[in-house]
Image 1 (tube, rainbow, N blue to C red):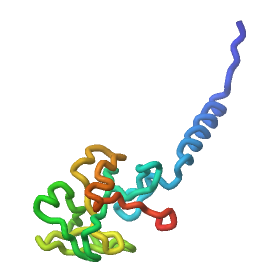
Image 2 (image 1 turned 180 degrees about the vertical axis):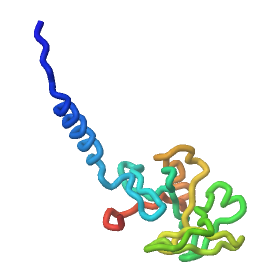
Image 3 (image 1 turned 45 degrees about the vertical axis):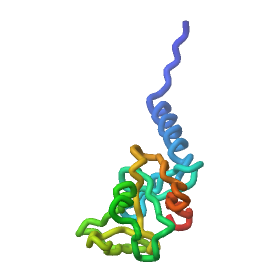
Length: 142
């Protein structure tokens, strides 16, 4: 029986090459825009997610710069709130909700999560009531 020695450097290069090929398979996913993450869901479309990877939605019945989701609606569709230290950036202004909370927006569309999403990569609320949609991010905005 013959044994062949493979230099450790060759093994390392092979492992690094495989990792690079795997990582480059989707170069846009898992990028961050400020504090928000770009995730791949919905048939490999890029959508905005919170830092934990939970999909972010917009509500068709909102007006630019104003949330129309409060009370029971906000329980099912929690607004993406800004903490006091957060500052608006680029296409992400912050609005003040009727209850006084600060809510993130994307191009003045208020942002929400879905109570139906319990793990990263889910988009269970997409299309709900023909009014809730995962926020798709065009590649040129990343």
